[in-house]
Picture 1: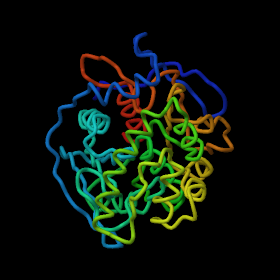
Picture 2: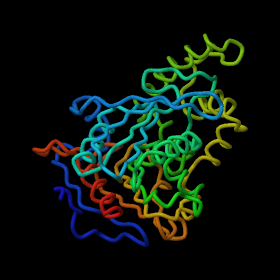
Picture 3: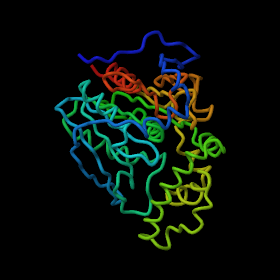
Length: 335
C-alpha cells in the first residue's frame, strides 16, 4: 500500500474540467517562479539506471534509462523540449512511481541526453513513431500493464500517440497522465514570442543553436546555421529547421499536424492533462473545457498555480504535488 492519494473534492469548471487543490506557499504563487525554481534548486537522488539503446526503423537510435525493481507494471516517461531523461522533474516522478510499485522507463528524444543522433533530423512535437518504438520495445518485456506520462512537449507527444493509436492501442496500455501540455502548438509559440517570455526563448534557442552547430558540421549542405543569431521565435526556428527536416511545409503545417488538441476525442483510454492556469508557456486554447474536444476519455485539470512543469511542494518526503497527483491517477488505472 503506498502513501499517495487523490486530492479531495475537485472543483468542477465545465464538462471534463476539474481542479484538484494545489496550494503552494504565498511566495511561490507566481507562474514564472514556479517554472524556474525546480531547474535552479531541485536535486533528486535516485539509483543509477540501466541504460539501453534501441534502433529505429530509419537507422537512428534512442537512448533509454530503465529503473527496475521487479514490478509487473511499467510507466514510460517522456521529457520536454530540450530536456532529457534525468531532468529533476523526470527523476522526481520516477522516484515516486518506484516507491508506489511501478518500474519506470525514461527515454531521450533523438539528440537529447548528451548523445547526438545519427541522422540530420532530430525530434519534434509529433515524433510519435519514436514513442511507439519505445512502447513496442517495453511491451516485449514481462509487464502486465503499462502507463504513459509526459511533460510539456512530451505531454503533447503522449496524447497525440494515444489518439493516433485509438482502438488499435495495445490492451496492456491503461492510460496516461501529462503535465503542462502545449495542446495548441501555434498558440504556445505565439505566447512564447512575447517580450515578457524572452528569457525562456533565449534559453531554448541557445540550446538549439548548439545542437544545430553540431549537425551543420556533420551534415554540411543539409543544415546551415548562418544567421542563426537572428532567430528570435519558434516560428522562425520551425520554419527554417523543424519543418523541412521532418517533412512539413512550414511552421504552420507542422503545428497543425502535431498539436494534440484537435485529436483528444480519439483517445480511448483514461488520460489526464494537468495544466496550471498561471503557466507562462500556454495559450488559452491549451485549456479545452468542451467535452466535444476532450472526448469521453480525457480529463483536464487546471490548478490555479503551478507554472510550467512546476507544482513545487516543500514536503518532508521530497515529492512535488504533480508527482502525488500522477501516482494517484495511474494507481487508479492499474490495481
